[in-house]
Structures are given as C-alpha cells and as structure tokens.
Amino acid sequence: MSIPVKFIFLIFPEVHLLDLAGPDQVISEAIDLGANFEIEYCGINPAIKTSAGLGISGLKHFSEVDFRAGDYIIVPGSRVKYILSDNFKRNRKVFEWLVKAHQQKVNLVSICVGVFVFAEAGILKGLPCTTHFQLTQQLRDRYPDILVEENTLFVSSDTIHTSAGIASGIDLMLYLLEQKTDSYFTHKVARELVVYNRRKGVSDQISPVFQYRNHIHAGIHRVQDYILENLSQKYHLDDLATIANMSERSFTRIFKKEIGITVNQYINTIRVERIKELLKNPELSKKQIANKVGLKSERQLERLLQ
Image (tube, rainbow, N blue to C red; front, side, top):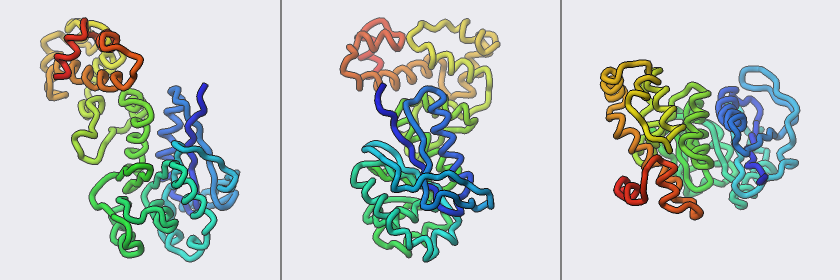
C-alpha cells in the first residue's frame, strides 16, 4: 500500500474548537470511508487551553513531525487577542518550520484567523488569501504585501489554501478532499457530515454531483445515490420511481421540480463528469470508459462529450 497522505494539525494556544473539529472531522470521515490518509496533531506546547477553556494535551512538538511534498499542514484559528500578541510573534522556530514546509511543496491550510500565522511567517507575500470578514482589513493593514480577498468562502492558490471562517473551513477541506479523491467520494463525506458542499460561487468549480443536491427530498436523494453508485447500468424509469417510492408520473414531475433538469439530463450530466475523471487514466480505453458509465460504444461517448 502506498504511503498515506498526512494531515498535520498545528494547534496554537486558545484555538477555537470548531476551527479544529470541523476540518478534522472531514478527514476523519474520509479515512473511515477508505481514504489513504492519516492525521497527526502538534503544537508549540505539549498541552494548551482552547478559547473555550477546555484543555488539549499530548501534542507533539512541531519539530518532531515529519512531512513530505503533498502532505497538508492545517492551522485552525485561535483567539484574535493571542494571534496579535507579542507572545505569539516570538515563535520564530515554528514560522521557520512552516517556511521549510512551504519550500518542500507541503500544502498549507488556514482556518479563519490561522492565516495570520502564515502571514507572520512571510509565506503569503504577493499571494491571494482570505480570512474572517471582520479581520480582512486588519490583515491587510498588518501585512500590506499580501493580497487579501473579500467576500469569498476560501482561496486556493497552488499549495496555499485559506478560508474565511468556521463553516467555510469545512467547505475548504471538502474542496481539497475532492482534489485528492473525486466528487462522489467527497459527496459521501459531506453526506456523513450532513452539510451542503459549497464553493466560491465560480460556476466551473461546482461539481454536478453537488450542484443538484441542494434540496431535502429524501426520495430524490435516494435515486441520485443509486445513479451515482450504478452508473454502468441501464436505467429504467419505473425502477427509479420505485426507489423514490412514487409513481412514474409523479417521479418525473418531482425530480425536475427539485433538481431543475430531467432525469435523463441529470444522468448524462453525471456521465460527462465521470467520463472526464476517467479520461485522466491512460490505462483505460474510451470503450472501457463508455462501459463504466453505461454507454454502449465509444461513438456514444464522443457524442455525449460534444
């Protein structure tokens, strides 16, 4: 088995629990669903108190943690008063450690105020980033050589990934998870978390798997799950209606009402996305890919892509 991708949580004193727990849960759920990941926790002290007063102990010293290119270091946000303090700024060794990680192509991820850690380390010079809307101007004033973006959930640029706040930290982690796995796997993780998977509002970043899930109709969700899990099969409308526990007439009407497109349009949209993912594998022929998405021939596949 290949070496697992490591997700290292760098936890500073007075960390906000949700900034830590949200992204951590995304990766934990991914591991439970079979992703080849591992999680490691470290800090500048072996034991800290969170912003809520709850203690966390057993943290490795950051200098004891190994990383490889492609791993992730995640910095959850801490209480602003601490992050802006002189006490925080004295941690030059940890800033040097982050610079080294950046140079070795480790992904650096900040949740909310965590971006100030990267800024203080000098990693963000000339790079786009974001943070909580109440702190964007303060970030810009303190570090005028970085490009602070407003009104966005998260910014992902090469190996630097920054998010606006607690909920958007989960959005960012789901986005990064999709880059490492695929859209359907990420949907399953999001479903376990019972959250909608959002993006930055850029249409070409919105996967069809998520784009058409922003509803609460349980029967239609069951059909969508069935289609995604059985894409190589031929679908019969009466079978899909049975899964939704509806008549065919009601199913076709309600599906279009909830999703905004017909059943056939939805199936073909999902097929196109899966085809594009499979085409990245040079070991698969177009005929094999066609079979995997329920098409009879390479000609059908080409026609669908056009």
